[in-house]
Image 1 (spheres, rainbow, N blue to C red):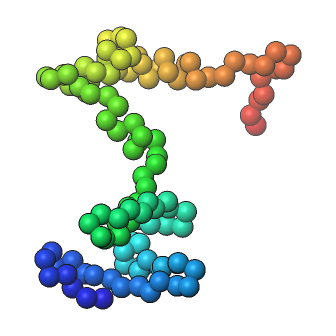
Image 2: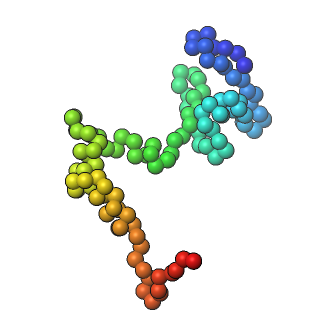
Image 3: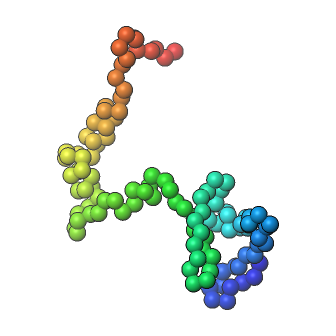
Length: 112
């Protein structure tokens, strides 16, 4: 491991294997939260290989979808989106709507 002169960030080295494989040093995997199955994207910028962690989860996909009007709070946005006044009302309505209806011909199961 060498040190970068500009940012004083450590520079890690690895060797390209015959089949094009590279082992990402553990310190970098830990620092970036890279676990088996993490998808990476590769690009070339200014003659440098750039490797980026692909973030594909519900929060990342939703980020930036909803823009608040100037001066609008998150609470105002949620009230308008839910179509009612008190935030707790939306939670109880959501819970009620998420309860699946009983199947025809079957009695509700009992827990013991």
